[in-house]
Structures are given as C-alpha cells and as structure tokens.
Amino acid sequence: MWERRMNKKIQIIRGLSIIAVIVIHTYNTYAWGGYGVIIRPLVNFAVGMFIFLSGYLTKENENGVYRDIIYRRIKKIIVPYIIWSFIFAIVNRRINTFIPDVFMSKCNGIYYFILVYIQMVLLIPVTFKLLRSRFSKLGWFVTPISIFLIRYISLWFNIELGFPFQGELFVFWFGFYYLGVSLKNGYINLQLSPKCLTNLCLFSLVIQGVEGFIWYWMGNFDMATTQLKMSSIITTGLFCISAYIYIEAGDLNLNEQPVVLKKFLKVLGDNSFGIYLCHMLIIRILNKLVPMANIFPINAIFVIMISTVCVMMAHRILGKHAYIIGV
Image 1 (cartoon, rainbow, N blue to C red):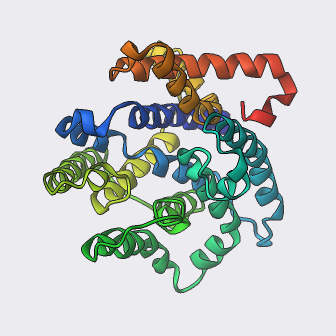
Image 2 (cartoon, rainbow, N blue to C red):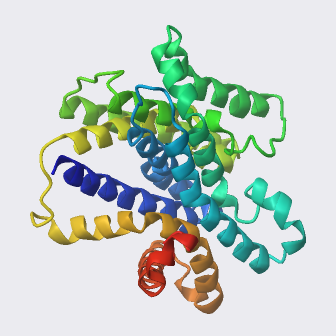
C-alpha cells in the first residue's frame, strides 16, 4: 500500500515536471522578452526534479553491488534514445553524422538529459561510497562549484562553451541526485515546517527573478532564463525538498478534490518519458501545419494533449513491445 501510494505521488510530480519541460520548449525567450524571465523561474525545476526523483528511487544495497540496477535503468532508456535520435537525424537531414551526434545528444538537443541520466546511473556505486565516507559533505558542493567555475567564470573571461559544458556533464546536476539519494536512504533528516518551506521557495523565486532580470538587462538571454545558474539551483533544490515532503506525507486519494487534476497529472507522469521523447517532434509538426497556433500558452496546451494521446495510442498498439520506443 505504501509503495503504491508513493508511486502515485511520484507520478503526479513527474506530470508537473513534464508540463514544465513543455512550457520551457514552447515559449520563445526573445519574443516574450522580460515576460519570459518571469515565466522561467516557475518551470526551471523540471530537469533537476527528474534527476532528484531518480536519486530518490535509488536504494542502497548492503553488499555495495549495483550491477543489476545499472543494467536495468540503462537498458530501459538506451534503445528508445537511439531510435528517437535516428528519427530526428532524418528530420534534421543529418544522417551522415548520426554516430557522433548520438554520443553528444546533437540529434535532438534536449536529449542531453538522457546522457546526464546515464552518468548518474553509472555513478550509483560512487555516490554511496561518498555518502558513507568522511568526505560526504563534498557531494553538496559539486553542483554549485561546477556552475560557478564553468558558467560564471567562462562569462567573465568571455569563453564560449561547447559540449559537454552546456548541461550535458553530470556535475551540473549531481546535487539533485545526491539530495534524492540522501533523503531516501536516511543520510539526512530535514525538519522544515510547511510554512517555512513555502516562504523559502517564494523568496528563492524572487531572487531567481532578480538574477534573471540582471542578466536580461545585460543582454544575456541564456543566463537570464537558464536552469544552470545559482539562484535556479537553490529554487530547484527547495522544490525537490517540497516534493520529498509531499511524497512522504499522508495518504493519497485520487478521488478527493481536485479529482480531474490529480488523475490528469498522474496520466502525464505515467507517460512522461514517451512525452519527453516525442514532444519536440510534435512542436515542429504543429509549427508547420498550424503556425497560427504557435502562441503561448495555446501551443503548450496543444503539445501536452497531442503528445499524451500519441504516447498512449502507441502504447496500446505496440503492447508489450512499447518499451522499444519508450512508451
């Protein structure tokens, strides 16, 4: 019963996170200008939250052997990743560079998340060794120090960043994974009242907005909206803690109000990987066929609904073979 309740809550959080991902990809930073800087702090938690949940779902083995979980997790995502990367290589007319592109997530830029996820999975044994060591506190500094040294210092010295320093490297996201693993396995115990946590989240959103507008006024749209700046990782960390408290607290009844919203978010969460894989293709098709619908948030709603329906239909048609394309 506990596991079932927890899984429902996790799927609801995944549902919210995939909505945030689609919002990020359907509004136009330049077209929206300052409004975009206001929107992004509300959705910048998306990737960090998925990484956090992956860590939260990782249990420590007493024997310290993790070959099975590493194999299962990578097997689950690697084939869909290759298939969808090939689809985008065809769409982008870059089949001749498919092999190097697939190793650098260049077939579809947003697939960098899968590279990050694979790195996190491979680091499971190292993560637990670090947590058990006297140097465990160092794990909390990996992400902020990496972002400061790579993102901020490179800007100071006007260094242009390429692969893997645009988000593909695990160090940018390790803090969220470390937080999930630590909370799940009892390495840290947080005692925060809901009111205190809410106030911290709101305050961090304000700070993120302020930093965003500073970068915006300096003409740097990337830093104004990115998930990889100091204020963003603080907000995302607080959102992850909020998610943890939500998952661990009280029972969940999908028949209690708001019924429709809960069930809808759970459906999105259940299909989130498939939606993630296909939604950029849906965006391109909609922009081509119905350009007048490319207005935020109308386009976001269309993409969410169409992607979800496509994934569910594909799952029903392919049945037990649906895993091959990640649905």
